[in-house]
Length: 339
Image 1 (tube, rainbow, N blue to C red):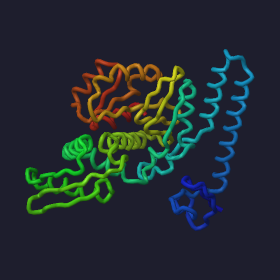
Image 2: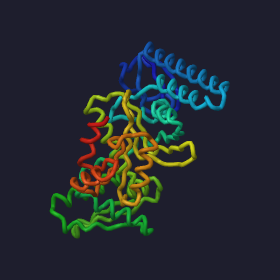
Image 3: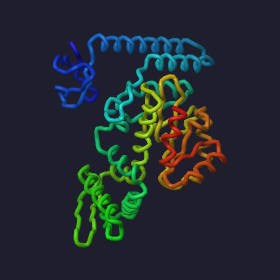
Image 4: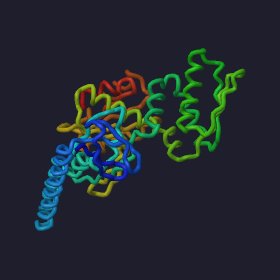
């Protein structure tokens, strides 16, 4: 009989009414859960059990070895864990299954193999909320909506609680698009209040006080947009099995701490790291050069994404530094060449 396990609350149940591969509401918490065939489900449990046993054996061997051999044993344990870790099927429309510890295991094993400790916030790749939808709306029309992002971010920095948008100066079609965007973002609770004064063509917006919303407008929208573009790039080139994360905190053996904005690891490939810079990045170039080398990545796999640089500027910066620079227009095409 088909079976499912809820990633949100851990509830396991049989479900004879839902076809295998479709989603059903969890009987305990109501979250959407994928239904699997029982044989397939048990096979995956056995695979993970075997992987955990291999990792445990490697760790025990590390304890028995001399200190000089402990690094090799740890790397062997990481390799064993990575071999048994399950990559996730790419589905840009429903990535709730990304927000699990299991989905992050291949990336964790890759970092551990280089003696780097990686810490993940699984909720950073859960698209059941509205942040990803809002990011797609903003990024796809950044030429028109970029001013709104800048105005909101500036208001947050200055401690203002509201902004007014005068739409009369815009062409009619653009004014309608901006007004519709504000109404949509209000519906997604990204604004505390929305009011449109039709005679004056003024949109009045009250800002949300929630820290997550402030982080979104101050740069989080770009990380979400890059993450979604990476998923689309994987699908376009047939990379169906991946491990992905946002906001990865990595600690090197000398205890240096860094945060990686977006990381995507296709099965059997090299991971791609994308640093998202909605503001200035010039003063951080040396830091990124050192970070790329410490991660052991080629320049094509360490990307600086800035929506404010032109195509020719991106090419010039990439020629000057051992890094790859892209804007939003160039992003997906580059990712398709390296994922």
